[in-house]
Image 1 (tube, protein in one colour):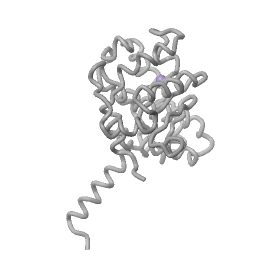
Image 2: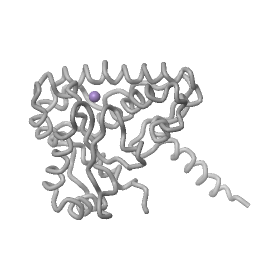
Image 3: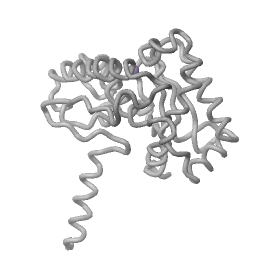
Image 4: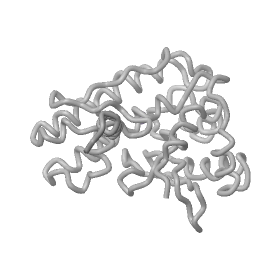
Length: 237
Ligand code: MN
């Protein structure tokens, strides 16, 4: 017999499963929508200028959302699924639209997280004790993490992303990786904690072609409070 308490627990688990950690709310069949920036476009200055943020969010992210909805018009069941679920199961998306969904669904998810992974300089907090222990075990120190993450961000040829993910080489708790285009570590079953967009549209107005200066400055806007939350909600082995 299920008690009322069991039923409530089940209902809560069902609702929670619709929103993956750090996630975007589940969609209905009308399709995906652009989430608002979680802060004013000028908040990340001087690291990222308001014009870059506005174009990046209002034009680039909007285009990923629009093109994702267009592609999935041919497969409407997928329009009702959370974007994390679509991206994680990209291999099951109908082949005729898979590439479009990979690029634009990845773009929608990556940017939805990216905005929340950043905060006004001085307000993003610091790694939690748990996360710092994992960073130390994986990279030696926080500076060691920044060095390895930066190497991935600068080593990604052309457009793409660098990431901090759960699970590193030699059974380390964390690792860094990079993906081309709008691919997501979720496509390889990895749990993502932090990512930096290294497409030129993310930095060109202010930093021109000097990606290294952008990446160096970007650590000032990392929203560690959000990263801590993603780390606390990681799938436990
Ligand atoms: Mn971008």
